[in-house]
Amino acid sequence: MFRPTMMAAPLLIGLLALPGGAARAQDVAAGQRVFGQCRACHMVDASDRNGVGPNLYGVVGRRAASRESYTRYSANLKQLGSEGYVWTEENLRAYLANPKAVAPQGSMAYAGLRNEQQLTDVIAYMKSVTAAAPAAAPPS
Image (cartoon, rainbow, N blue to C red):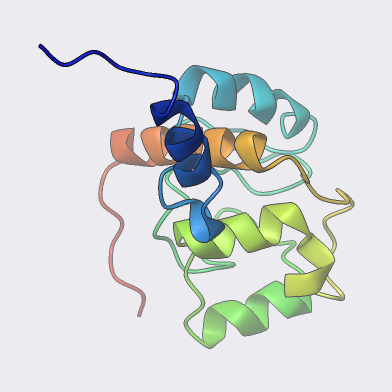
């Protein structure tokens, strides 16, 4: 019979610390709590309503600056979108960690989320909300 030993713990900890989040555990409920910081400016529901920032319902996999009901995108995000920049998990991680590194003249006032586990969790939450969203039409 196999018995776990303390030798396995360092291996597991090492896997969780891999660059790029190869083995990070995702917690959707924790991500929803982290998203509370975003709610001051962003909505995440199936409506066409927006807040100060665009509604983020279905954002994962969507082209940047492509939500038609939101008209106040920064020139930086509009350019990224026109170049085909898509909100992949990797791109969201970079943007949420440091918005000004991705869009230097962007209008998002948030300085960035530095905690790697919180980034992983909030992206898991955003993916879960995207999974609930109807498939978007391809960009024209």
